[in-house]
Length: 366
Ligand code: FES
Image 1 (tube, rainbow, N blue to C red):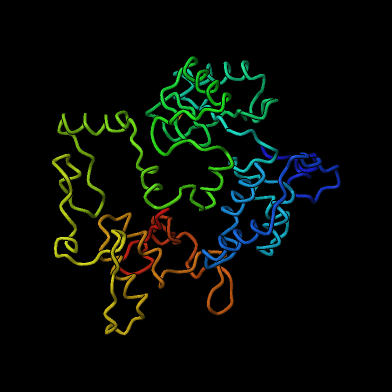
Image 2: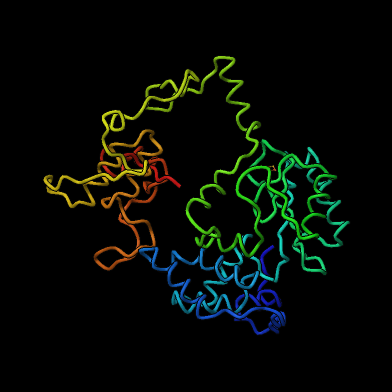
């Protein structure tokens, strides 16, 4: 739930309200110069400073366990935004917590599929055991419990996450055991994905700072073994039955679409040529009259395998229209793209299908 204007919670978040601001917990570690240095490191990753706000909110959360008034103020100062603007973002997304959290966030999916398979029973049982309701923290500070509306793992329902790591196909007893282990200070390995850390640790990762000592350890964590059978089951059934998805409009079916085997290598890979996105560099020739950046972007568009990849590469092309809200070279803000023809609208503007860059596709990849 969002903080209501005028409520103590809203005041604590934005620091702008007349109502009393909740005092910060006495053991709350202060944000330090190091936090500021890391915030500036995040800002430097983006061409437009305010784009750094989301990871910066995760960063302050990683230090204090929630987005405190001090955290809001730091983000506002560094990004030259108002505290109200930062507060508006922090109160919009549920992953930003507006009051101190426990060591772990336990999220129970109670959306339709998980609910009918027992998700609500799990939530009710944990709530009764822990003596807390949604978005509340146990007295010992170990667990913040919340219900979630679809954790994007419906094929593993009912799903519980701890600090956003998945514990699949739970039932009341397994969820109780999981929470009991967390309260004992253990970190049971998630069903799939990286090892469990804690809420502050995962917030730091979401801010873009690795928790791992080196790249090799990070790769091992990311590629940790897991049970992916439910996700693959549909694919296997389709292969057994010879079923395939209809080809995308404007694209010939490929073997991969018909479950006949892996997609052949991209022509640029088959020729040993460079291909961006595969860890290789597209080298501009410098003799087309375009800038190296434009040439490299052209090559990325040409090398894209699928319409979605092509659209993503086109959206990132330097010739792509500026999205609304960005400053144009002539100093204006906004976009030159007519309404309804912006990237991501599928090109279905009022005048029919459009292409933002000739031959490069209209949609922007997420
Ligand atoms: S309904 Fe629970 S993960 Fe989607």
